[in-house]
Image 1 (cartoon, rainbow, N blue to C red):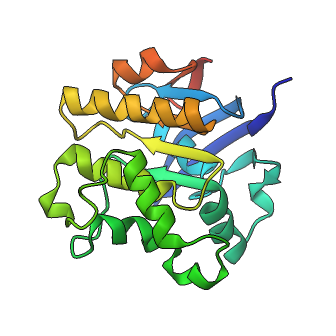
Image 2: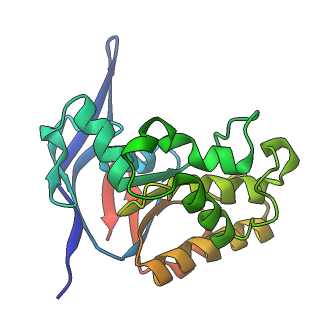
Length: 227
């Protein structure tokens, strides 16, 4: 029997900029099963990133309901939202957002350093294990400027997994990479999905990701046109 990890119910998102009203999402309903690898595709401006931000509690819907891992995100406030993101969600972005003066190992550890004393595991050991899992066992002490784009994205993926999240959200993770490096990142995400049972939701224009996904959701003008 399948188990739902994400439930999106009649969600709309609007932005107001002065007299201008922008409708980013219109009455979206979607479910994602635990362990699924889901690709969200569509032209620029179709609402892909907005949808990902709502699932990751980086933004709130104007209307509708988002439930992740049994938690209604609309009921969370302040520190509860921060705790939810830290404990359940891993984020990977098109831009790597690594701190240039920190090593790969330090960048992976960074999100949990303020909570180090509360953790039930050794933070450095887990960071090392994750860098080994993404093939960077020999690059842990390198700064981001000493790494290739693909290596930097691998560091970003390891950092996203440091809190042992239930869900990995990746927004155009191969957008800044050449085709071969992008393929390697796709294979890495799929391997994490299969071997660890990690649920992955990816926004993408990359046909490699689409081909490797369990399911594809297509957006156009803020609406789902195929799910």
